[in-house]
Image (cartoon, rainbow, N blue to C red; front, top):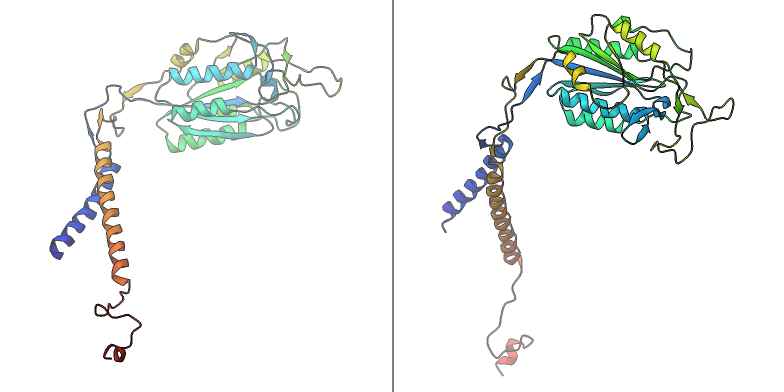
Length: 325
């Protein structure tokens, strides 16, 4: 093969590799997926109690009484399913309040945040206060209003309302007036209360939380009146959760409106051809590796010194003068 032809083939192969990389990034395909992308106009901010009292075993479940947090997790998952396309964020509070998940339309991220939310240990907290998250919650809602003023912000409060300390500043959820367009307070637990498992799995294998003053098993009692007061301050309904189901009606009360995923949110291609470009790219890369290996092999042989061979019949140690004798 002529040198000019070989050089042209190498250049074409390398240009092809670059172009195929670009094609793969563009994810080529044809057709459109049948399932439309639904976009909701609401941002749902969940503020959830993660103090140890949420481990109390007085939430009715399929297998008897279960931890309050178990019922809360199931309800939040159902709420997300009832609001497809909405953005969800989460702020958890205990000893302090912190944003666990910024507002996102990634439903899988919200589900993971709900599932992996951990409660404070029996000795980690400094007492419960249902109004502790108000300052951080106000900041979170204000940021959401600045970033997307056209979206409606919905507040979902999840907790048992129990206050076990008077330390800290008195806050009111009325300070959030004007920052939300609706919401709901979801309450868990009973006024009679129940013990709290010590272990992280909440199955009681390590016994129950003890009252440090009496040494007896501690009982957490939900404060339903406190929860109703929070709902009044927010101007939203209060739902005492006593079992699964019913979150569809809560979602309907948010009056979310939906649009097709057309405005900048492309539906995925029904038939993706990225794999074909990947196969071609693999073939060109293998050819490039083969050519490189051949070049290295040829250079090794070219640089290896060769020994000069003498005339037939002469010993390589024989001096020329001896051959004339």
